Image 1 (spheres, rainbow, N blue to C red):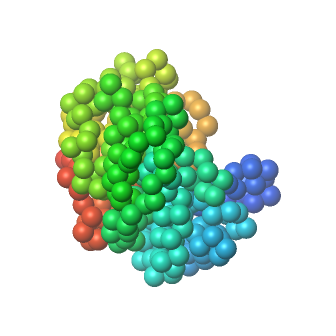
Image 2 (image 1 turned 90 degrees about the vertical axis):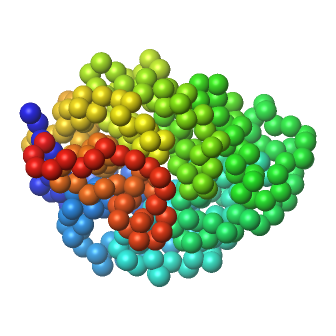
Image 3 (image 1 turned 135 degrees about the vertical axis):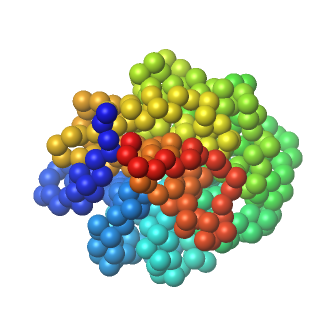
Length: 350
C-alpha cells in the first residue's frame, strides 16, 4: 500500500521558487502569495512548519502590501486583491505575526468591496463571486472584525446577481445582505453556484457552506440534500469530481470533504478509496501531488491533497480546520472553532 511520502513533500515545497530565472516562475507571479499559503499550510499539517524560513516568509508577505489600497497583492507591485489579502492574513497568523497587519485599513478595504446585493468583488475591477464573499468572511473573522458586518449597507434598487436581480427592497445590514445573497445562490439540488443562477459546483459549495458556518447560519443549507449531492461526486476509482460527468481531481478531496465535514457527513463517502486515490497521485521521485495519477505535480494539489488526508484521519497529520483551511489548533486558540467533524485520527502506519 502506498503511504504519504512526507519527507519528499517537504523537500518539494522547500524547492519551490528556487528557479527564479524560469519563465514559469514569472508567469505564475499572480498566484505567488497564494502559493506560499498553500505550501506553508501543507507543511503545518505535515508537522514541519520550520521547513521554510520564518523571517524570509514574513518579509515576502509584507513586500506584497499595496499601500494605496490598504491590502495585499499576490506579488510585490501587484494590485491588491481579496484572495491574496486573505492568504497574507492566514500566513501571518500561522507565523504569529498578525500584528504586522494594518487591520483597520484591511477591514476598510474588504468592506469597500461589498456590492449592494451582499456579494463581494475580488478587487477594484469588480468581478464578483461567492469565492470572494468567503474570503471576506474568513479574513474578517480571523481579524476579529465580523462585527463590522452589522453596519448598514446602502440600498441600491438594482441588486447585482444576474437575471434574478430585482427592483425590490433588500436587507439593510452587511451581514443580512451576505446571508440573503447566499440563499439566492442555493440550487434545487442543495448545492451552490458562483453567482445567483449558476450551476452547483463543489468548490462553490465549500465557500458558501464555510461562509455560513463562520456566520453561524448553517440552517440556511439543505443539509441532507446537499450531503447527498456531495457524496455523489465520488467516482468508482475513489476520486471526487466537482460536477456531474467531470473527471476526478485531487483538489476536490478538500472542496467536497471540507463541506461534508462542516455538515457532519464525511462518512457518506468511501474514505478508504478516496485516500488511496490521493496517495496514488503522489510523485514517488520528487514529491508533490498531482490532480490525478501520472500528471505533473503542483503546490495547489499538494496542499489540498494533504488537507483531504487530514480530514480523513490519516495517521501522523495535524488536524485541519475545514472552515478556515488552517491548522485546527490555531483556529481553536482564537475561539473560532465551528461544529465540523472529520474522521478520527488513526494511529500508527497507514
